[in-house]
Length: 281
Image: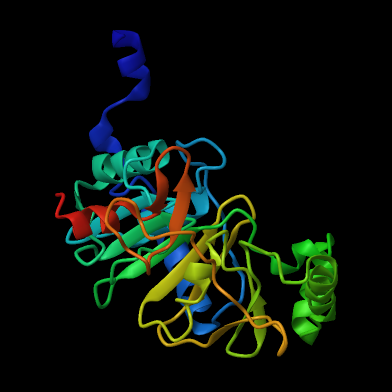
């Protein structure tokens, strides 16, 4: 154990928030560019992180580049504050920064999330960072990066419209349950990450700054406050959010995003929101 400790070195030798200052400055510059160009993918130099692949290293790098000593951080994974991913990411943030963490979305200044947007109101001025596995919305219809870049430049999204039309012909409705394509400010097609359609509807004209980081694809994009985010749909098949089968079996909510848990019925996906309604601290 002593030998392993020598190899690991002194924990105090790490930079604040693990990343070196040069890396954080580069990420902040790329983030500013992404905010100036809503929905557009901006390339950045993704770094190696002490986390397993698939844990959303792009979003975590954004969080670590933005967090400051005065921030209050909330980390959730698919709506759960206590999942393995959330607990370990929270530990990484706290051990390398010492900042305070919270389960209350209204208290947090920086929210690191995967696949969900909190159902509770977010604090004014807070930043929500989402982890992104696949940033390219046209990957559903076109495998070539060169072609997708050209399609974005020409605003040629006919293949996506055709994909949605064929979905309606096959199933009688648009069956996409996540990664639902959206037009940002009427100019660029964006992948909102694998959040449910319930959360996609929250993005339009939202007063919160949303940042999206894809580590493997080395892309970052953003939705500044009060941005138009319109899901693709047709006049006779309008965009619809999910319909849960029943109110939450714990708190009785019928407005939050709910998932069916075998043996327990329909429950709020956002555990902190559900606990708050029950008065559980």
